[in-house]
Image (tube, rainbow over all chains, first blue to last red; front, side):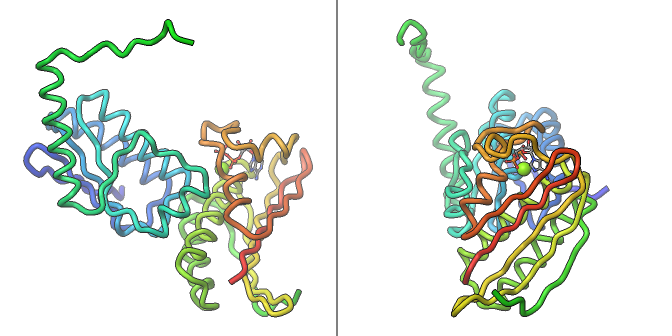
Length: 137
Length: 134
Ligand SMILES: Nc1ncnc2c1ncn2[C@@H]1O[C@H](COP(=O)(O)OP(=O)(O)O)[C@@H](O)[C@H]1O
Ligand SMILES: [Mg+2]
């Protein structure tokens, strides 16, 4: 079966989506990434979508799912290289990718991952503040 | 409105949704549609093709190059003989889904197109038509 390759690059995993994915392929990427994060203990995932000509609600949901799934597995996800026309279209589609961090290109994606990891390290050293505001309306 | 050129494609597999995207891109390029408009139309087509496949049990897409007054554009019609939609207003609302999706397909396609028409009857099927002008 056809698969999207996942490369290990130091402590990160790198996925370059080079083809116009059909839905089953997108779902298998989600599963394969989960497995790879567990297997390699990766701390970050970079997903390069610069070849993608569109992001519809299915691919958007996949990216959201990957981001929240990796968070559970203690890894951070950054999506890089979204085309401007895709970004514009996503807004009009109504696609909310609030949970997904994005960067312009791979270099900036790596920088962002590293700075987020540093921040996490210092936060866990300081014991994070409680953000429990369930008593508020 | 005059139809200058038309073609039809079956939508029976998830690969056919990819094929629809590629075909719409080709036609949009042919009429010189700009990149953002192309992207909007293809995204809408992808959503509607997926609905045809997921909910309609498959169907067909009709693609037409149309001219109206001084405008040129593409009209896409997605048709299936699936279960139809009981409450169209509700189905178009953002976030409404019966299939575990994001519920953005119909509402999103309506926003991404210049014209949007839906014709559906429970038990008979669904036809969604969109037009995007150049
Ligand atoms: N061709 C169709 N045939 C039957 N029902 C449909 C069709 N297209 C859409 N629907 C219904 O409308 C709902 C909303 O569709 P949509 O906005 O594309 O969101 P989603 O696909 O994420 O559910 C679907 O969940 C389904 O119940
Ligand atoms: Mg849909």
